[in-house]
Length: 353
Image (tube, rainbow, N blue to C red; front, side, top):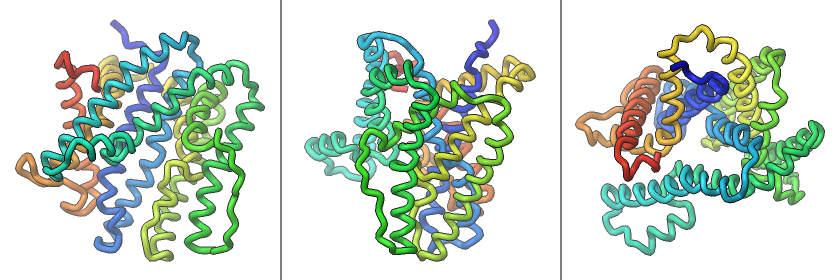
């Protein structure tokens, strides 16, 4: 049976995004410790990290692109989300609390565990589940908006998101580090804060992007990458500390990076996929389908490799990051993928990934 090709670019984008997430978390061991590593190592890690920026925004954009055009009742929508989000949400919160108790905090009790679960303090990467759940809660209202919105409506809303949620906080961070003007944008437009802009941007680009945009998108992507790479280095060596200003998911350069990469993949993959074999397509589809599970479980293998729980150490610090980061990222990705495939074979656990 032939592989479905209608949304193959979505699967390619998911594959790249989850691989980038793993790379970011592996490279973080060096990027955040710039004072204690050689300059060449830090710049190499910064290169890999900058190259992987925009991964989480891309996931959010894909969710918006796929969910907002659909028409379904509240009951159908929330029944689907219950299975796909709520069950993994609860299962992995419990898992990481138990992991913390077993390996790091034997005294961790139920009241503190409940407090962390409610406050979103269980594990560094689970914030995504809280964020995406919040977006899903407003999907029925956003569908009404997108069903009737004109191009001008979308541009206006996305422009507000960029100014209020992206540029404003970025300027405040930059000003606090260097310029000290005290100028702040204090217009409380709560409806455009957070990741809602990415959610609608995915919908808008899926609807509006054209093949003629690819060249411009490629130039924008490369410029956004350079801005992150060089800007992060500039901040580190002039501010004498590591603020993640250019790394932030809502930073202007990250928004431009994610949007341009989204367009590149969306418009080029359909022209390339006909040259791919069915085996390659099936592999990409399998990796894409496992992306959510890989996101949820990959910190386990970063921890396992860091602490030699399998009898050997594998991390970004084990050698020069030019090879240690891609090697570790590949191993974490591969082990995570195999773990997801294994979990899916267990009836009681398959809905958690």
